[in-house]
Every structure is written in structure tokens, then in C-alpha cells.
Length: 567
Image 1 (cartoon, rainbow, N blue to C red):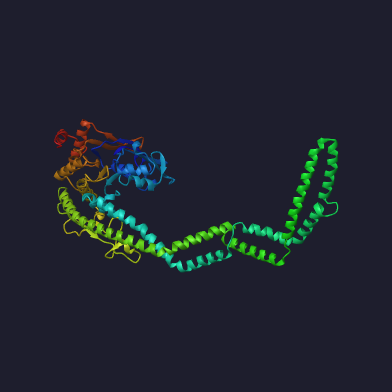
Image 2 (cartoon, rainbow, N blue to C red):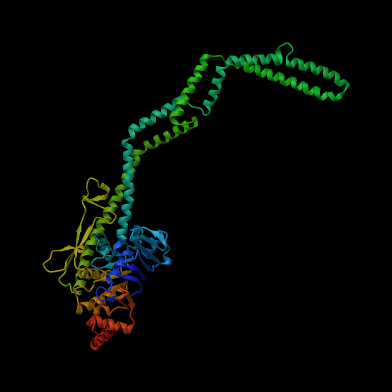
């Protein structure tokens, strides 16, 4: 529900604040006083494109603000929550229009885009007027009107859920088939890589061991001479280290008989001699294993070259090559199941397709029955609004599928989307002898407003929009018809917040609240002001609407009588 509207430096409005309540609010005033400017401001706050030409002369920016109270369980509350706004705080929309075309939008104090604004305000309020952007008249919304009126939203939601189950499966099937088309060539590549790696029979760490062996083989002669010389120095040669240690041991043994403190040193030297003998033996074993074999060196280098090539193709290490082999084995296993996966996906799609077709046909049948009933009710409502000769029909059509339409999203050659198979258009002929034309092509703002009023009256209990603003609802009518329009607006106000701009007292008298819009000149500038009328002021305004600027005792009495007989 719209609670506050603030307009600054916009057209001829200097600074204007209006507080709104629920029920029916009437806005009246002389022609040119600024009523249409208020509608333009509301349109901008609901997402219309901004134009710097709307800024008041002498100002660099215009500022518009609206405060809405948001119902807890409403669609708007859900949308706000999904976009990071707390609906408990209400909804504050602020737009700044700049002459430098640096327009800004704020939602609850946060900078926002026009797309975010349109998303939140789409079902927030409806403005009906000759130049207003009226969502109700869009063909895509007319289908929703039928579904709301016929209680078909749950069935439509089932169609949507089924549709959105099919779409990802279609993509999955296409991917599987594309993979199968590439399968032969891809499998050949995988099998070649698998064979190439397996034939080498890699052992983890093998390359490191081979590299060490290659170094030993290339330096075998030097290693042999060095180790043999070391053995002789330690053990074999005359005066070898072991021999000299044994002599030292004997000398110390003699000395230890004199001083027993040397006994431990004798034991240490004996241990050292045994340790050197062990080292010499290990070196003899090492000497036997030293290879001076050009054939083995060539084999090692060939093996290392093979391993380097594998690492260059499949990974930086032998472990990475083995992991690549493992992934190849896994992928080849999956490809073996590809045909089975395609069959399973096709079976799943066939089941969902049959379900989708059944649901869409059921929905279409019920829509057509609902459309007949709705058209009758619209004509009946229009008859009470001085449009008794109006023809109103709802045209159904399907969209043929083409070569780009997936077979699983078609039925009998027609395309299926998330709302079913139907596209509809509300057709109207307001005047006798005129052909039926789409509803959005109505030129007269008064006729358009009355059609919308008729639809709103019919859909009052199902319509999600909380605030409805009517402009020119009284164009081309008067007398008894205006009385009927006023009653309908009053009735509609039991389900929605209604704001109505009117020049007819027969409509104005039904308002729960009444504002007067006027303009005057101050310091050489035209300014628009708005005042909420008390009972006395309201009688005077109704009298003005009845008789013009010259208010007589008779018009005052008439206005008083009208307000006393509103039921």
C-alpha cells in the first residue's frame, strides 16, 4: 500500500508531500493544476524511464520518493527478501533525475538499477490512464488474468515445474549424443594413450633410481679404481690402516698392564679396527657390483629417454602419468555406459513429455472455458459503465514449432513453454460497426480506464496488486454512469488501495479521502500544491466540481446532499 509520495523540483511542482491511506482516495482539481504530473511521478517511481526535461526550471535535479507498506506474505515481500531487502522495514523508493543524465535509483537507501526497480515494482501498483504503462494490457499478462480468474494457477504451476524438469534433461541428452558422435575418434585417442603408458610398465620412483644408475655407469672406471685403492689403504696393503691399528692396540695393551686406565682405550681401538674391517668388506662387495658395461649404460639411457617423453606428454612426474592413466581408464569405463545413459535419458524425457502434454491440454481446455465466462462478465461490467454496445472476446492461438524447437517441447506440431501451449489476446470493439482489435490498441483513455476498471472489479479478490491508480476513468461519461463508476471504485477499494483522479463529483463523493490539487503563482513562479480536505472543504470542492468557479448556495446544498447520499 502506498503511504507517502514526495515530489520535489518536478515540472511545476516545487515541493509536494502526500500521505495516503487504504480505501478510496480522490484527487481533484482544475485542469492543468498538476494532476497528470503526479501520475508521471508515480510512473517513474514504478520504473518508467527518466527524462531530464521533467526537471523544474532553474533546478539541476528532481527528486521523487514513495513509501510503501508491504504485506508479510505478499509476492513483493518474497521478491524483496530474495534481493536482500527486509520487507518488515517497508519499501522506500527514491529517484533522482539529473540534467546531466546521471539519474540514480535508491531502494531502501541502497543504490539500485532500473532492472531491480522493475522487478520489485512489477506487481506493486497498477496505473491506468491514457499514457500509462499498464501491465494489465500486455498479452503475456492477459494469460495470467484468465488463470487467476479460473483458479488455474496451481495447474499452470504444475506445467511450469514439468517444463523446467524437461529442459535440463534435453540439454543432457544433447550432450550425451554429441559425446557419442565424437566417441569413435575420442576412444581411439584414449586407447592409444592407455596402450602407450601401459606398455612402458612404469614403477613409481623408477626414473630417480635409473638416473642414479646412469651416473654410476658413466663413472664406473673411476669408481672402481677409487674403491680398490681405498680397500688396500684400509686393509690389504703393507702398513694398511687396520694393520697399524692392531700394532697400536698391542702397544697399549702392554702399557695398560702398567696403568689400567688405558684399558678402555685399548677396547676402543680394537672396536675401530673391527669397524674398518667391516667397511673394507662392504667396499669389496661394492667393487664386485661395479659395472663397466656400455650395453647397460645404453639400456638405462634409452629407458630414461622413454620415461622423459611420457612425462612431457602426460605429466611432470611418473606419478602424474599414472594418474592420467587412471583417468583414462575411468573415462573409457564411462563411455562404455554412454549408450545406456542415452536410452535412460530418452525414456525419462518420454515420460515427462507425456505428462507435460497431458497437463498443457488440460490447462488449455480449462482456459478456453474460463475465457468464455470471463468475456461474458467483462461485457456485463462494461454495460454498466456506459459501454453497453462493446464487443469483447478472448482470442486463442498456438505457436507452431520450427526446426529449432525440440520435439520434447512440442505437441501436435505446436511449441510448449512454461505457461503451456496458449497465447491469447483480449479483443474489443468499443463502438458499433468497428472490428475487434487488441485491447492495447484502444486510443481513448476513458474507454481504456473503464475496461481496466471492469477487469479489476471482476478480479478484485484474485488480483495481487495492492495499489491501483485510475486516471481519466471518468472521460466521456457523466450522470448515472459516473454514479455506477463511483460505486465500482468504492467496491474495489474493499480489496485494494484505490487512488482516483477525477473531475466528476458523482465519482468524487464516494471517496474515503479527498485531496484538492491547485496551482498558484508565487514570486513569479507557478507552483502546485495539494491539500487533504476536511468535511467542510470537501463540500466546497464538490460544489466547485458541480458548478465551476462560481459557487452558489444551490451548488453548496447540492454538494452537501450528494455527500449525504453516498450509499
